[in-house]
Length: 175
Image 1 (cartoon, rainbow, N blue to C red):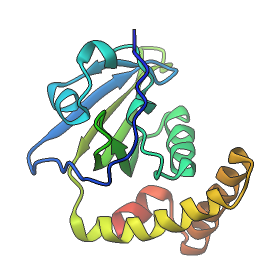
Image 2 (cartoon, rainbow, N blue to C red; image 1 turned 90 degrees about the vertical axis):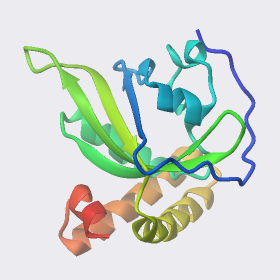
Image 3 (cartoon, one colour; image 1 turned 180 degrees about the vertical axis):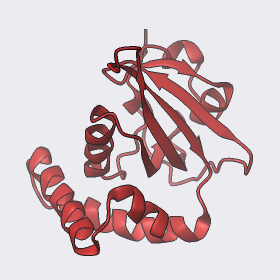
């Protein structure tokens, strides 16, 4: 089982290598059931601490929560999603990934878990995403009630997509 770590962001980046691929699997509640060696190395957690831990163990506090809501809503609807995610290693160093998250389905088409592959994002696209995420994070932090802030930022994302006439994946690939 997982040990709780008090992790503080350092502001130092731990970029992924061009050919590196982080792979993980989780159960229905988002607890890690598999982590490859790249995840262990980049995240700086022992494998024994990752297995059974919530995937949020690597969540960076500067990652907009509304993006995770969008991610969870999408995969729980049995659809895949691509998203840029800011993660934090055990040291407090951060690393950006371009994530592809899919539900794992059984023979009856029931969700039995989730699978994620993450790679180094394109620097030019990431610069655009950071600007959007800064706006979303500022919106979330305007509210004392964290849930209300997340819901307001989520509404901003939905409004942006509606105006553009796009689904989120289309938006991500159009950046």
